[in-house]
Image 1 (cartoon, one colour):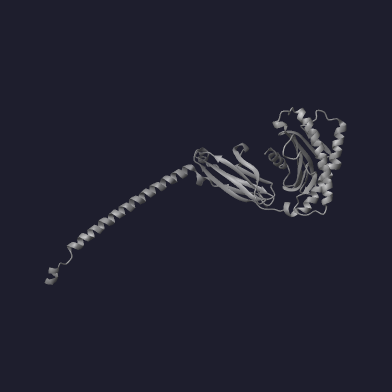
Image 2 (cartoon, helix red, strand yellow; image 1 turned 90 degrees about the vertical axis):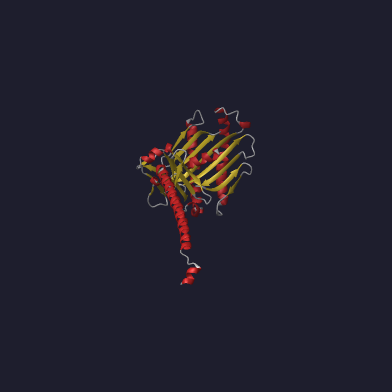
Length: 354
């Protein structure tokens, strides 16, 4: 679970309209049923390569055959081998430096997410890496090719001398970044029909009366969209609702390769009486303009709902009373008709007299 959450949270840093190539690597210290080292390479949200220390072989998972498969294997294999050596050394250091010596069954996990970004104007973006050890974020590197600098946060090293700094900068500038950008552009050409497709979001407004609190929950659901970047905001009287009042907001996958996002807000009975105005706005690459949808919460006011129920009950009782009275009246009328017929029927003697 942490592996997936860490991966998804880091992928959200990629800006809308851009494309990313991300390698998610796992190094395991200790005996498990999993490979000691494994890597999944993702183009945006499409898996391209898989590599592990059991086979020591790059497996291509592309939707199309690549004519440069041998070159891809060579480039990816070299990068992954270097990543393996680096993560193995760092895992040994971190295990002692962070005093993680009594984990479950002696198993520890070192994770790394590393990759580059191609901006919407085909301009190279940042090259970044994130490291975590046993669930703790321990390191972050950022290389900006335009400004030609490296920024490091939460270093695993207590000291970082100038020689090591120059070596790392050289590797990022002349090896990692060029290889990443070259591979990213190649995969974009291979998978452009898949990762560059555009699907507009479908929107649903959901209102649910809360019986326990006599309040109302409103939800704005956007689903079926691609790519995954979307901006969904709930407003109250023209102002964005605070995040701590909203539930949801995660981008979740659908079964057909598209995505969905839902944001919900609970409105108390008191707030309903104040007659605030609520609306949901949405921005997506496939929408020409911002989509703005207004919630009609008045129809779902719990007070109004109670009044309507009482009114309906009264109407039903009146109808029952009227039907009962009509049945009694018809029975009485039928009885009077039968008596009248007996009194005025001609007798045989009277007929003979005529």
